Length: 354
Ligand SMILES: *Cc1c(COP(=O)(O)O)cnc(C)c1O
Image (cartoon, rainbow, N blue to C red; front, side, top):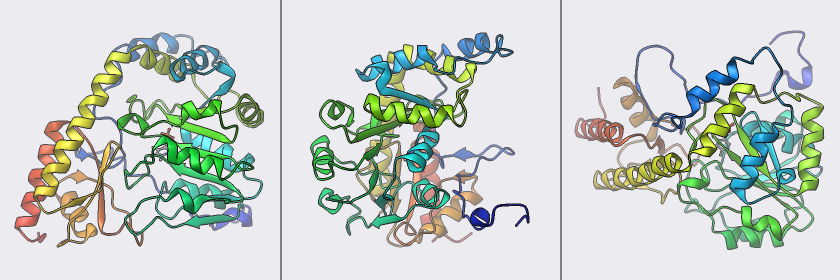
């Protein structure tokens, strides 16, 4: 560790992103990106924006904020835009957790990292035996609650009424609902914003909008919370969205039919792939996301992960107590899921050797 780094941060264990191989082509089913390209209008919009890249972008990204607000049925002052939703989560951990943070034991791996980065006390609330998040476990948490819904890596989702129960049981604390995967079959909490001032919803263009490379996230909350988030952002990086990212986001939002078509394809492919894996003996959760969370009773997750890797297929395996048996497999195109299924059939037939 470098001697110049602040000792309080020297031992921080950072978040480990999924591999982003830059070399030989492989089947990439490890980071929940869209297998489909961005909306057809995105490339030209980005090229046009790049022509003005000598000038700073609009620090308020007002055009995109208006479009996002319209898409969510909110006012622009209830929407906050960030460089990926991870940036919004960072601001929320940094500035909206005066009593600390609470989150599940098996959820988005960034939550514990942010809690440590900002020196927050964290309460870890275990999922139930069946990996379900039980709303009653979150009553009177006494701190800011972070819930990914649908959850990652389980794919399991809470309904809007269950989320409302958590909001009612924590009137003095914020409940941050991370809806990175909501478009693939979850129920958004956004309509609850009218009723619950303690609700914050975080979303992203990275998954269902096929723009992981553009780095665009949004937060929907009361104008008061958004005002606080803007204070943090203007104290840190007022130009957090590039001209090119703003243009990409606008073009993606404009093409609703392309969005629906990609989403519907992914949902249909997910259901087909889950059925095929179950036919091979896998146990899959009832995922409402663009990934499957699957284990095979006869093979440890790590063995399958490594055997797939040898066949140039990347999936995600988490070396964590309750995730170790599972693979998290991003839903790709039907052809990609065919290739995955064939490889798994092969691996299982060979007894995972070789
Ligand atoms: C992918 C993901 C995010 C972050 O996405 P960004 O690319 O930073 O917008 C946030 N939360 C969860 C649960 C995710 O899976």
